Image (tube, rainbow, N blue to C red; front, side, top):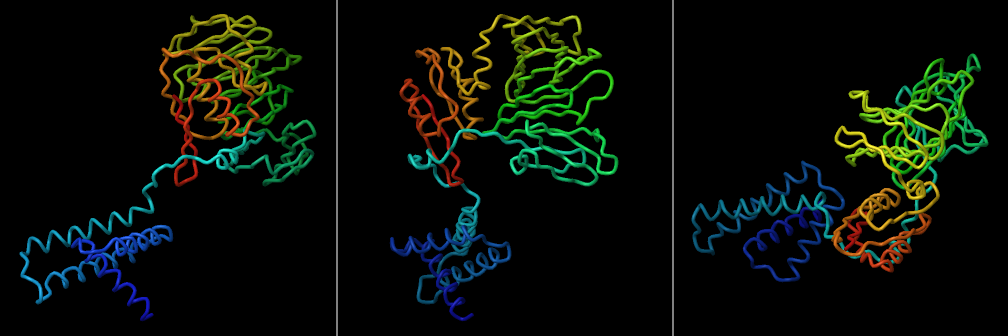
Amino acid sequence: MEPVMNQMNEIYKQISVFLHRKDTVQERKELFDWFEKQSENGISEAEFADIQNNAKKSLIKDIQNPTRKIIQLRTVRYMVSAASILLIGFAALQFWPKPESLATTAQLASIPSGKERAIITLGDGKRIDLEHLSLNQSIQTGDVVIKKDGNGQISYHDVKTGKISIQKNSMYTPKGATYHLTLSDGTLVTLNADSKISYPTSFDHGDREVELRGEAYFHVRKTTNRSKFIVKTPGQKIEVLGTRFNVNAYPETDKTQTTLEEGSVVVSVPDAPQSNVYLKPNEQATLQHGTLNSRHIDIEEVLSWKKGQFYFNGNNTEEVMQQIARWYNIDIIYKRSKSKDQYSGTIPRNLSLNKLIELLNYADLNTKALVGDNSRIKLIIT
């Protein structure tokens, strides 16, 4: 115990010397190294209070040393306050992010492209990571068995009756992930990264309703009773019988886009039913600021994410950068002037991040990669 106390007394003295600006370069380095080590290990409130109190005592004792000239009380108060500020600053090191540095090729190469992964949230709030559930494997939660069959379809059965257990669940794909879901009516849903769909485990009589946040591609199956399939997004409703379409409804954007590949859909705004839009193949409905409009669209561009590509059309670079950020779970700051020539072409989505950056640079999208103390990658593109 005594060696520890001696070490602490020495630290208190070093703080005092530092505040008097009498320390050497080596002494200052040792003091900073000590506080940084404490920040990494974590300092409890009690330990911090003890350090602060003892540092003050050591500083006052040093100032009031008889061998030194008498110092005015206000100076003592100033130095004690400075000691407190210094200690608070050092304690904050454990919360204050370190300066960003250039990312190395190895760090960028370690960031893979997205993969198939999703998390199911049950009606009772329990979460199940489907990455840990193999094909033809099942798990039991309470009286419900959840099974992933050979096609990846998730089904729910009551343990006691063996029948389909109807409950409201949700599936979420985190950033850097997609997932293929088969609903109980046979409808196929592909979720893009950072997307969530809420759905019943089995559809009862009447309309088949799901709710979406993010982006998803739907291949809706027709039913014998011709029940409507309805996709609800914030401020919008899509009604179909049997068709293929894509919905982009990320909350961070100011618009929702519904694009039809095959069949027909009706897009409506609940608060303005007179504004219904009927889409034909290769048409897109856009809801923005409460207004619903439609236009002809290049379906290849819209469905490029599902086909494993980033699609640049010459004026959508900023939107594609948002896709890249979600796909690799990184941060992107896009600073390129719109007056500059924009890149047109496609880039595969299955590349590691360093290879993607090489292609962006090749396309004259100058990319600077930074890494913070949390190892998170940030790309600055000019």
